[in-house]
Length: 614
Image (cartoon, rainbow, N blue to C red):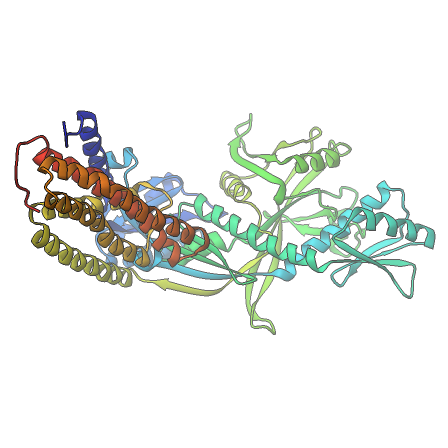
């Protein structure tokens, strides 16, 4: 029978619309003003901290909606923005620097919706407000680390090839290797040129030595890797600490843009992003007394460092392994109930660790933690000077030959948790510093949303009035399909984890409003043509939908491909526009071709009628 869907297809349409409505539902609940309390590296959030927070809020006479502790963070929900600021000031003063007290916005989605994965649409920085950072990578330090690697690796390579040398030292963007005779120098030059293509080798003029410098291509590779690795690690750190939908992308040759929608207080964000730390595993020099090292009596192959808990320790300069080779880290407890961090290495890291510890069983190995913090001073280029701070966070005795998996002990519980987090997120390839910081208030985001919604509503009103007047009953069906289309867009945007609505995204939805009725217009005009050609009502409806399908598909598929290209090559606002446009195209095709026809079939399908209101 013409114009009749089977039951399963009608049920499918109802199911899709119901799912879209269900997942769009969380967007009507709004958000609460919240204050989040989290720990720094040297502390942890406990039930005592929760009790302290409750006491301080009661003492300050602050009205709250709820307080809960989850995943090492205390969340305090309050009634309004003024109360939020009061709560932040009271808690920050009471808890001190051991805890970070940050402002945030917490969704009020009911638990039953959260249980099925429901949540509000993620809003971009321009709509929700938040924090914008422009970070600069210290490329000089990236090159310096590569040069330090040369000084460490070349002596072992030369010894392995049985080439005798008298010394290795730093020189410009490379190193200088000294030899006792020209025969050994020639042998080393041949070896380096054949083994390494990333270095240029030349003979020194005044002495028996080789100058080994990095090529321009290798220097560019180091800088590109520093940017790309730092972007990945910063994104991992933000994700690990629960900041939703961050934007982390490259800008220019040495800078990274970080946008954190919904975060109102830059303090916590700086705590996350400012951890420009690296890790090194080194052997402890047990032959040198730290008291001798304090007065300057220390071998050239060792150097003096300080433990985090206090006290000197002498470490070998040779680095066994850096944090670059760590693939996983978990905080747990050992067989004695003491905190530990279990570490997994990649294949190369496992080989290095096994080789270094094979002959070091029973000797202590230290974990050296290095941070770069701004001094408040500027260099000649106007950039903040960084102070290098090194601390030995753990010293553990090597019980057996280590491989791709081992553990670090001797830490406190909070230290183990934070060290595992840092190791999972990775060590930055080079230090970064924040050169620009902007906080966008929620009020500006609310104004953007209001303006965007106004544009969308007025566009819909004009379209709805036109369709109702020009196509009459079929126009009402098209208008209903348009409402369903918007509902599905919101539902899909809320369901997809990576989809974020931005101001250009609202523009994409406004454009979709016009495109959504375009398919119905094509169908209705074909139905009119069939009726004018003398076809019956049922035949005209069937032919109208059937013949218009290819035209609608061609137009929408080409637009979808264009949107896909925009998403692939675009950044920021362009991506936000492309995402909503792609989703809108998919939902508009469904509502125009499938959903509207299901409704037409229910009203007119299979009935003996001689006239259509179209």
